[in-house]
Image (cartoon, rainbow, N blue to C red):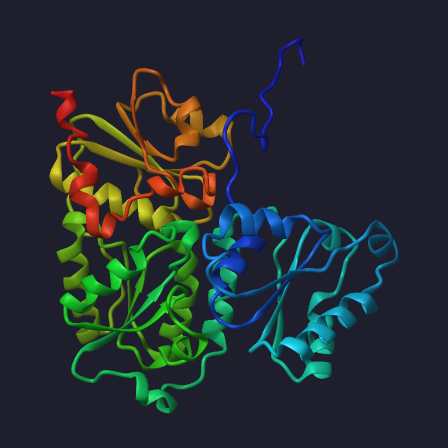
Length: 398
């Protein structure tokens, strides 16, 4: 070692951590009438419901935790787990059951697919398990949940009652409060689409019932609004030929996305909304930290109204094809901080401010999946209020 201290990886000394994959599953399925079970000691459910779920006090949902004890972990005791779920499910009659895994059952090798089959046989209710482990972010968990729904959708022909043939029908994929909060962004999205001659077939998964989601195969196109919706979009494309466009309609990106959606309806070709936009390579350096599709959309909007050079740091699961050469995937604090040193302006959740350079101007953009309820009232609806949010952010440099 030579007496030198080496930096520790996979640790967080200053900043927070993102909501876990188990909570992503709960958020994605919250409104759909299913029963979601965390197999874990009691306590983690209160973290989710208190900090990461703004709908908890206003809407009924069946989010449960198994209350795994030390003795259960040592002995397995799967019979108790199954018995409690079966009794509750027979009383509550959920539309489906989803089992989620946390570190302790992962370490003791609990066979979740087998337990799901047993529970389905005993209840007659569709039951699935998802390979979560609480070590990945909410994006991974929500992606698993949405893709599970997409793989099990019925064909389109049974749902003509909720279609509108006079307009192109669209699915909104990847809409949860962890990325969009509960500030009306989902409503703004639907209003914007209606103004652009689309009928919202389904919103995955805010403001749409399970029955509405089950009509998704009748749609003409999908709009992927976060990475958690991309796997489901690909499944819908493979199963039903529904093309998709990736991007969030923020500011000057709105006409670009509207055009891309109409093109996709007519050509069945998929597209990344910002893919053909020219990006500035000079001017002030703007860095954005957060979920890849949301932040790439915001970065594209910024380049259209300024001469700034933008780059995105994504600390969450994503794909390289969504990022440019100037962007970075950096999960850990020790990797993120050095990438910020050359930035003139940083857009990020307030909890990132302590690791940003003092010379950079910091723009607070709270993210529910990172800081939870702390700054919930300050999260903007950028679909509706981009102009007011961005006003004055760049003039102060002049």
